[in-house]
Image (tube, rainbow, N blue to C red):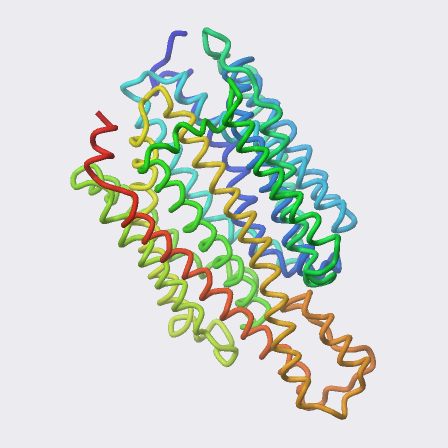
Length: 516
């Protein structure tokens, strides 16, 4: 298929449509974290409900994103891309109108299906439509605009949530998606592989989706049901069984969505293991920092969104430089120091106590940790992407990118499920210790207080209880602060583990040899 120049009208329309569609996904992912407290109050959602809200989207996206890319190769990238946009904006509208948290979670599943068709389509359409000598520039332009949108996501989410308009985080996708669809329909040509692409790995997709869903459900049920409940251990066992089945399917399938032969390369295995640990730590860390700022430190949601600006500005300023360093000297040292620095940033954030209330203390509390975290990620992202793409032959570059992208989502699913459960358990344990020192409190009141641990920072006082001296509020704040600190330390530990993975698996000589 003939390609077009980037600066031609056709090339510009391809780039604009890809940027617009990607913007919807980036706005959703970054804006929603900041708006969660407002959404929780509006829909009377519990802590586990919030983690399901995040995971419903990520689960489907992780399971189907490789399938979305294969479908585009097979039946037409523009067709699949447009279908994904249409499903995504339909899911977004359903999210905006959702009357209950359950309906919202189901609508997020629809968004996940749309995202799985849409996200791979944006880059594959650029790669297949733009001349090879301008492809890097086109992807760089796409990345720059995507980063700018990512900057605005938390700010937009915070502003809308503070105004009581969190639903517009979803509604804003509708006009953006419609404009992208009009451009694609009238201005962008269809592309597909000449050989029709590979067959779709439906059994593998079903196994990974069901396995992740069962494990997530099992972990999120632990706080309410207890680990000994059949509902918990049977679903966890079933989930593990489905993941084992997925590995078997991928090993024996002629059209595997995740070819296991790629993992025989130590560099490819190492960089994907690094991705899993680093993004699990980053995802859980950023989520709990947002919750702590709003629910514990009394930031407004707009202020919480603005506090992540240093992180994003560092990403914009340093990422390209870090990529050049990786090209010149090899990625290994950067992939050791970057994740280690990010881990130190997360550990610094774990020491912020409940007494540091208010945005006035930001530069003494959150700012140093966020800057350190931002520096670490800025020196990691570009070398990590380079290593993924260079660790395999050009024939598998698309598959390698898809596998790494899917693992990023899977790591977030596991982090949200496991750390969400741990946060509730840590909170309940801290409350139990404090309640042990109050023998005069009625047993029913204690039971109610312990049950409120599921709501994390939105824990409510028992009905009719007078708290004139703020003792109960302080009890909740102490418990949440303890849970937050432990979760952030675990998140930092995961990032440091990622640095250790680099030490063990990744060698510059291997990356350079594969690149050639």
